[in-house]
Image (cartoon, rainbow, N blue to C red; front, side):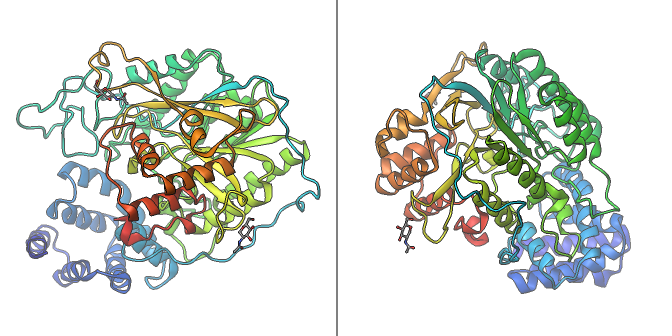
Length: 568
Ligand SMILES: *[C@@H]1O[C@H](CO)[C@@H](O)[C@H](O)[C@H]1NC(C)=O
Ligand SMILES: *[C@@H]1O[C@H](CO)[C@@H](O)[C@H](O)[C@H]1NC(C)=O
């Protein structure tokens, strides 16, 4: 604390002499920063930052960069790049909102973890039709399942440099960074290394490992590497095109993708109610074009006109796949904090989901929801998570399963999350839907992996979920990565809960798995190791275990038992 304070004083001196901004304002910013220790003092900090924002973006940005560098929050180049990109959005937010209001509270939650997320703004989602009195029963006739591949968070790094250091102080390593000094601690291998994003060769190897007999694949987003302080439009454009091309040239069956965090700056998809923001339409246009061979012209039209969401009947099936751009519900999308107005459904993503689910119900179809971010995590805005949960409740009979990615940042990579008709009484009987979350391809936080599902062709329910991985630690990995079965969910968890050979891995099944975790520490530790595919397995005491299980029982964010303080 003392040294941080000294650093700030030092920074104040440097800053004043360098930029000649009012010394008293700088002192105020520093004082507010140092004394922001809880939610009320964070609001006071925002008042001061708001004054700074009124001095203009460049003053605001350079002040933030100096603070970041002085406090050594990141490497100097990361401070510079990240804040040059994100801080102007935050300055715009501060100029647009009251520092005492609810939006300010949300900013204090996401930026500093000093406020709890506010209680959900009560809002009743309306539906075109009441639920059917006699919901259609989807019954298996016992046909052989077909296979679907699920991969996610590929984060391909086109600047990956074999031989560069895989140990570094930046968010990703294995690049020839200009500020690198000293000997190389551990050289990056040609096919990938921990702490680094994915070389294109590893993506190719994974795509070639997907069985040609797969009916189709789902890709739950995140194409671009995590050197987010450097990312700009030209690079994102070429990365998106290049991965679309790679998938198309290798896979023999369609891919149904989603929009991930690939805005520039990262995550920053502005709402269509923000008129002053740079448009991210170019991303939707690139993907509309790149995905058209798989999602056909109707789907491609929707991607371009629905902020990246679309629906399609999966090839050779009667299954409606509904792909949603849920980055409009993502806490780290800083455009979402630029108004004190209440927007229940930014960019109409929830309305789009309802329309598509109603169409599926009317047609007697089953549907799958696919999106990047699981809507029950701590990084989802609770309002939109709650409203989307109302949609799940209404259409749970139509939704056979949901599929997400994204979570590898928290190194909880291979999870599931359950929705309940009654969150105050989470039982197997009340479990209505399940989200299956894919591991990441990037070896940044675990072994590179993908999933294969066995799918019942009548019900489109999941009969088994198998994780395949390639072992970075294996000596042969850098010559020729091989992909082996890591585990089958049915074989691993089935014996714990008892599931007959004809039953699918239903929401009730997954709930019973969480009960088995509660009762059986060894089973829980197996799950815990699965989340990083055996890499850096962290211990988890009884408190941690209870919270983890609660998280698995929450596809609705307000129920995930994580408050901002224990989250740190
Ligand atoms: C919880 O749900 C179960 C299953 O639907 C039901 O039997 C039970 O009565 C409920 N308990 C409470 C306290 O609501
Ligand atoms: C990966 O390989 C290492 C070294 O051979 C081994 O210790 C580890 O158990 C393997 N991990 C998995 C998940 O197979």
